[in-house]
Amino acid sequence: MTMPRTLANLSLRWIVAAGYTLALVAALSLMGLLLHHQIQAYLLRLAEVRLMEAVWALHPPPPEGPRGPMALTREEALDLVLRLRQEGFVARLLDAQGTSLSPPESRVDGFPKPTPDELARAGPRPHSKLIDWRPPPPRERDPRGGDRGPRFRGVRHGDHLVSLIRVGEEEPLFLQMGTFWAPSRDFLAALAEMLVTSAGAALVVGLLVSFWLARSLARPLERMAAAANRVAAGDLKTRAGLEQGSNEILAVSTAFDAMVEQLEEAIMAQRRFLADASHELRSPLTSISGVAELLPDATEDERGRALAVLEREAARMNRLVDDLLTLSRAESGEGTMILERLDFVEVVRETVDTMHLTAAERRFDVQLQGRMPMIGDRHSLLRAVRNVLENAVTHAPTEQPIRIEGRGNELIVTDSGPGIADGDLARIFERFYRADRSRARRTGGSGLGLAIVKAILEAHGGKVSIVSGPGRGTSVRFSLPVRE
Image 1 (cartoon, rainbow, N blue to C red):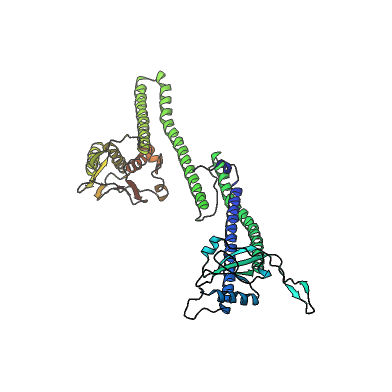
Image 2: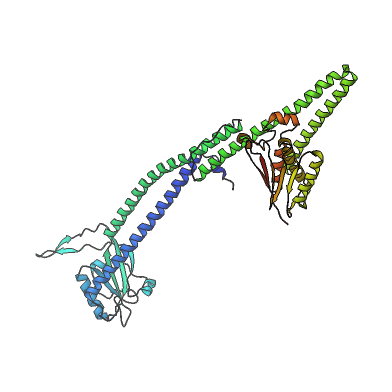
């Protein structure tokens, strides 16, 4: 997934902080609007209930009837309007056309006339709406005669709640009542102000938290980026060095350090390989070069010996190059193997027969039972078994037999040689590594035999392991993917 271009050039700190802030603003705005709306709906419903309670108090519904629907005659409805006015409510009675039927009163002047649609939808439950209406202030009567002037009752402006209720039994009659909404309106205004103030404070705290969080996320990534740049510059000792943890950033840091460590080991192994290969090739080349310098002035006998040296060193170089090529092909899997169905027991017996010809003085205790069917390259497997047997022949005492056992999907080759030290055992499968360098030099070994064995077995889906110790001999175990 590609990051948008506008974000690609921004710092991660700003991206996280901006995203967190925008999400916080959206959440607070939505919560504030919903809360304000719900409280306004609650206050509206509460005002409607109080209007109905006032109506029921003056004209109680029959005990057996439902609480709410009313069925009044015109006389009863007019009487209810008068009594509501005496209690201080603004009320009037309307007919089906919205015309007032109740006695005129100054307090209902300017009351909105219901629309036909509102009259059609009116029922026994109040249908209410908020209106901008200021009732005329009542005048206080002077006992000596005349009016003293308008008497205001704290009305600041005309926000009122007007409810329409159908009350007629035999004809469509509608009761229109008004109640003062200013306290509820003021409360909602104060609530909105409080929500805005709280949202602002929460936004400030959210900004501080988002910047702290963004910095906490960006710092380890910056350290990893700096470490990656140093590794790219050639410093393979560099590590991100973050603490262990289960979150994604620390997991990436751990994976990065493990990758750099493996890269360092691979490059160091490559350097050792180049150094060892150069050293192995330098020795026969030095011998060949020295002998070639002596040939022009050599006697006939010296030339014969020189030719023997040249032949031996050339054969040594040829074996070394052949081992390197075999190892490279086995590790890369470049399609050099010719796979076929075979019995690994037959491969082992064929190798043992060949070893009887090249090492006639050695005894092999072969205990192979049944079959070990598998799919593999016969030539490569012959090479792997031969390398193990040659190592055993080289290092084990002549008078002691070399034991070869087959168990299920395992082949075990055991000798009674001097064994391998623990420090050497950990590196025994490395290229050019020799547990006994003097003995390997004397026998012409290149130090690639077991590395080739390991590569061939892994290319076939198997594995090889060695159990050994000083004075305890050596046991090489093949684990094979046996299948019919």
